[in-house]
Image (cartoon, rainbow, N blue to C red; front, side, top):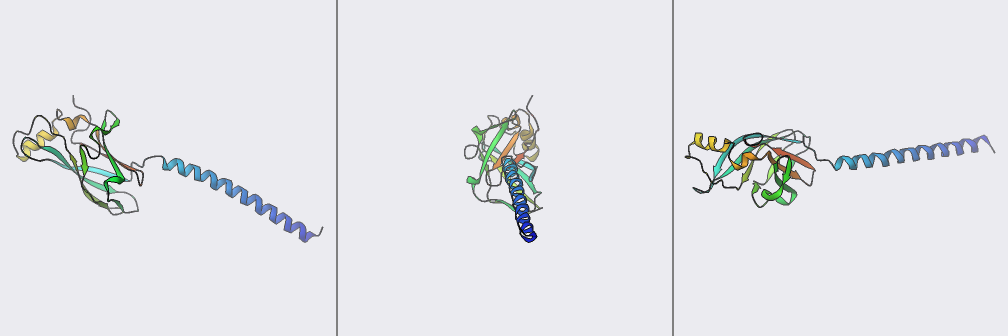
Length: 180
C-alpha cells in the first residue's frame, strides 16, 4: 500500500469521524432547542398599567385597562387575529379560563409593537360588579377601580399566551395581590 493511499484513507476516516461528531452535536442541540421552545418567554414583552377606567351603560359599567407594552426583542411583534392568542385571568397563581378570550376578556386588535419600542394596548374586562362607582368623576372612578373589594382586584392579573411565538405576557391589575 502506497503512502498516498494511506494518507487518503486516513483523511477519509478523519472526515467521517468529524462528520459523525458534528452530527451528534447538532442532533443534541436540536433537542435542547426544542426543549426551549416548550417554555413560554415571559420577558420579551413587558406591560405597564397606564390607566383604568369604566366603560358601558350606567348601572352596567365594566373596567377597561390601558397598558404600555414594551418590546424588548429585536423583532417586530404583532397580534392580528384573536385566534393567535388566549387570554386568561390568573387566580391564586393558576390560569383560569372562565373569563378567557371571548367570554369576558378582550384585547383591542391589531396590536403592533416594533422592535425595541413601546405601544399602547387596551384590555376590556367585561365583568359588571354589583356595586358601581359613586359618580363618573375621575376620582370616584379611580377609587372604585382600585377598591380591593372589586371582583377584578381579587385576581393576580391577566395573562396573554401567544401560541405563535410562545410569548407569555402578564398584565398587572390596579391592585397587586389578593383582596383581604
